[in-house]
Amino acid sequence: MNNFISFSDIDNLKLLVKEAIELKKNPLKYKKLGKDKTLCLLFFNQSLRTRLSTQKAAQNLGMHVIVMNFGSEGWELEFEDGAIMNQNKSEHIKEAARVIAQYCDIVAIRAFASLTNKEKDQAELVMNGFKKYAGIPVINMESALRHPLQALADAITLQEFKTKHKPKVVLSWAAHPKALPHAVANSFVEMMQLQDADFVITHPKGYELDPEITKHSTIEYQQEKALKNADFVYVKNWSSFKDYGKVTNTDANWTITSHKMNLTNHAKFMHCLPVRRNVIVMDEVIDSENSLVINQANNRTFAAQIVLKKILEDEKK
Ligand code: CP
Image (cartoon, rainbow, N blue to C red; front, side):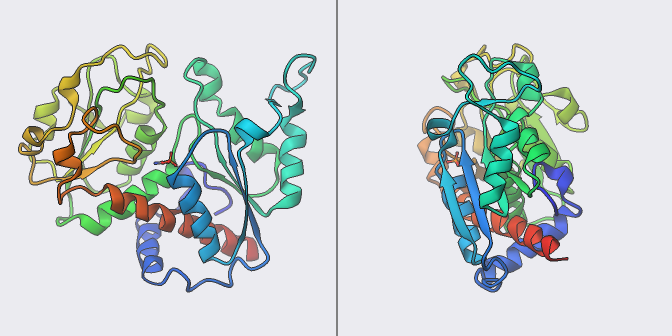
């Protein structure tokens, strides 16, 4: 693996998940693999899980870690080729990416969607800029369009908790007061398209994700119908893609309640966190024994660790 920006960088998801579960049994087994190697984590946005789990994953492999809150501490970056930089942007991605690559062997980046400029978000300026100019492996810690480390952790969690070969997995939208990005939902859909599962997406009309991403998935607009006999319920809010970045629906009837969970096949409940309790999901569901949210958060370490391990091993070849 040279980079991990999306699921297209993975050769075989099933095998990668199997190896991650093996790694989880003995996380320090490859403690020498990352000796004298440095991982740089650049955050253009806030994080709890991604920051700590990726740092822990690197430490489990014996790597050094440098963390920078680029969004608040770095110079504002210019991405446009040939830009006349006489406004507020102080440094071009061409220098910034190359400079950062002088200090580390792998760079991991978090840079959310603006949700104001669809074209720029779709272009993945930050992730692609680093990929183009850094000349070292790049890991996506959530970009404008994707959150593959979260989806890989979710794949590990699904594998650990599924009790049948082809479970029914439902991705449900729920209302949220703020406009949220599409990245978690997009990567979850891309990951599920690689799984042997009965996968259904449910959301109100007008909340369709990018049709390029969902084109091979089933969409059911009636949430209760979608939830019937589900083995896993993954809830997530996202803002409108069509009416880009807008909150056009605040219907609290989409909240996951115990009544809705009773329609399922005693389903496991999943969410990437952070979650707004009693807005996205009721306390009784997230606090129930069927809630996997802490298992998902724990698996973030092993998702990051298997990705770092693959990159380090391929660098040695
Ligand atoms: N799920 C997730 O990526 O959490 P953080 O935003 O806290 O890193």
